Image (cartoon, rainbow, N blue to C red):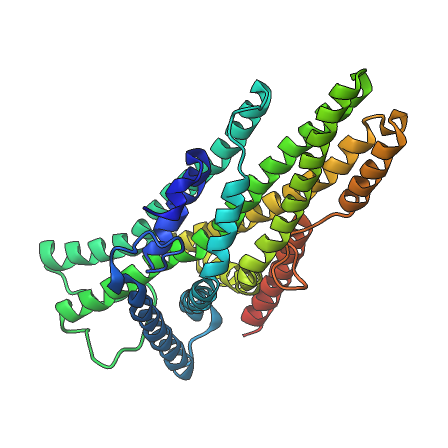
Length: 406
């Protein structure tokens, strides 16, 4: 039995789909494939496939440059090479941090609160936010699936119809050029092997690159829900303290207050653990996302063909999942600040002195905005998303200027 199965089902549901997509790349974060001992070694096979693909595509780009290809002719191939390089780096990062990620998810799951002792409106709030992220994830991967298959499969079907049904001479072209040590131009079987190799790589990379950042997004959303429930706990406690008249009632409330404060400390620790567990993943995305968007966008804007407009859709997909992650990073930071606002607005100054001291500690902890960080210098927030888009536009403008001059 996987350790994940011991946790609350509604909590596990938000992770199950993403963990499955990582297992497509032979990364078993939660040891769900422990009954297959050989599975843990297959990551070496997957990484070697990505490495070979990166070498072949980079060699193809260098060959085109030596033949005098311009930036527009290279843009599609450059975007593929950037995506493969990004995927390979993320693959290594996730694999070597998988134990930290596993420990974080398990600890967050232990802190998860079921529907018991929650007011109906809080239960609805929790389910609504879980459902919103799950539906986004499902819709995103449905769209990604359709896009990748249409991007890679339609050109192959078109070539096969011309070759085998219409009996026309066709060029064995691939969506992204890669230099291989054999000639497949006159051998359809070799061409099909090369094509399907690239097809499989792009399909798996689509899941790998998006699954890791959506894993961060789901974790931030779950942590945000716990902060919102905690905020309501503080409100309820302070209202009870103002209305409680007997020493017995004050004793019960005080125990509840101490428990809630400890829970607050735990959630702040979990924010730090989230940054540590997923260290570098968001930063890697930021480093590569500008290049990916620019190369795909450049091909779409200056290519002008129907095939080139598929590159525009690829740019939109990248922007969507980065924005969604930054949005939830901002919401998590805001929910931490909401604790201080909730406590401050609770007329705490009317309470006995011993409670004022406790409340002061809560205020001091909560008045600073805590952002989830990816490396020491990169925070996951809407401000970071804005900076990234500004940098992308600058990069795109430079590419446009170079292309027009050439």
